[in-house]
Image (cartoon, rainbow, N blue to C red; front, side, top):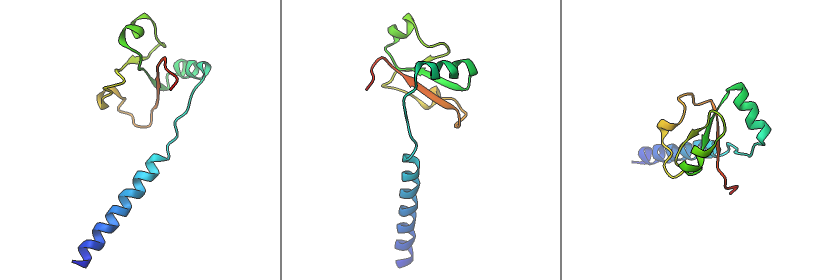
Length: 92
């Protein structure tokens, strides 16, 4: 019984450490020039989270429209190391 409890406690600690390490990824803002550089290089996947009618009126070249309320794993690139850029008209 003690061995089971110890094993469970260690597993919980390891899971917590992994979650904390993952939370340390930083997200930031980019300037228009920085986004343009990514578009020119083709080294990032760009996602427009504005309402669909706004996207249809104009968007960043190569940007894919995704509903901000319903982003699915299938919307994202298979390459987990690829840079992802999400944008919308709201700064918050």
